Structures are given as C-alpha cells and as structure tokens.
Image 1 (cartoon, rainbow, N blue to C red):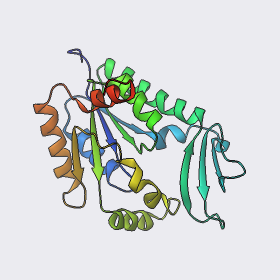
Image 2: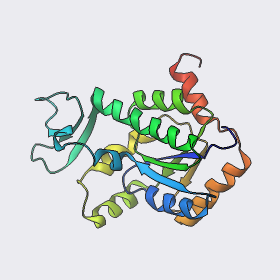
Image 3: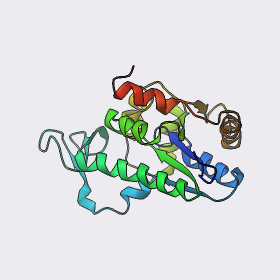
Image 4: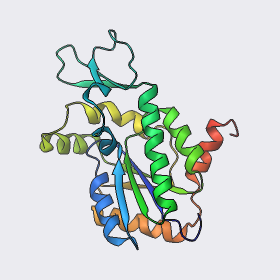
Length: 211
C-alpha cells in the first residue's frame, strides 16, 4: 500500500453473523473516511432476473446467481454462481481497490462460498487487504436471521459449512462471544500491528499453484 492509500478490510461470514455491525464500528474508529460496501449493495443495483430461484434441475445453471430452493420454494438450500455473478464479485473488489487508491478506507462485507471468488481476491488484493472471518454459532445466527424477518429462510444453514472452509484469515472474530465494539477493536489492533497482511497472499499462492 502506498502512503496515500486507504485500508481495505474484508469481512467474510454468513448472513446475520454480525458483519454490518462491526463495519459500522470500524467506520467510527478508522481515521479519515471509510466506505462500507458489500455484495448486497451491488446486487441491489442489478435487474431482478439476475437472481433466479429454482429447483437446481431446470435450470441447473444461470448467468447470474441461482438460488436452489426446496420443492415448496420456501427455503434456499444451495447457491450456484454463474459467470456473471463471479464477474460481479470481481467488479466489487476492483471497486474497493480503486476507492482505497484514492485514500478512502473500504470495508467489504461479503459471503464467500466459491473458490473462484477467493482466487480473484487473492490475485487482486494479496498484501493490500486484511481478510477477517466473522464467526457466530449457527443457532445464534439463524435466530438473528429469523428475527430480522426480511431475509429468505435457510441462508445461514446453507452458508455455514462453506463460508469459512478455506481456513485462512488474518484474524477471526466471534460476534457471539464478543460485542461488535470488541470485535472492531480487535480488528483495529491487528491492523495497527500488522502492516502487511498475509492471508490473501496465502490464498493467491494456493490458487496460482504456489502452495
């Protein structure tokens, strides 16, 4: 990072794991101005047909994002990213890279469940962004999700075993054991002590055959 660059912090975790609350605390505490963005923000700008709900058989794949649901259509059971969904993720991370290059700090709030996305962020942001896992017990995140009442059922359960399966972070925080303020403080302490984050370098080597 150049002296004028802002910090990039990627928060990865399931729906309702507490990422947005941590991001708000980081916005209050990081010096300068901090943008908070994420896949929900980008998805909201797309036409409705970008996200398709189906049984996973017809269709089995789409250009955008396929949410595979139960037969009654009431719960999501799987996510399948088409080429345009992967391209959307790359656009999001390139945007974060550009904003940081002009001096803004950027918090990226994401749910990463595809190795193609991990490869992209490793390639683009190795050594330039901090990769933080936001964890929460499944039952707690599921309860939070249900209490919000504005999200599709089944998201937490579908994401839980996949989102952290790559196993590489600069830091992991637990929003059940600690408050959002405490989690943000831990992230800020790590950023202050580790000027050159290493997790995305590990991922970049993994997906480019260096590991």
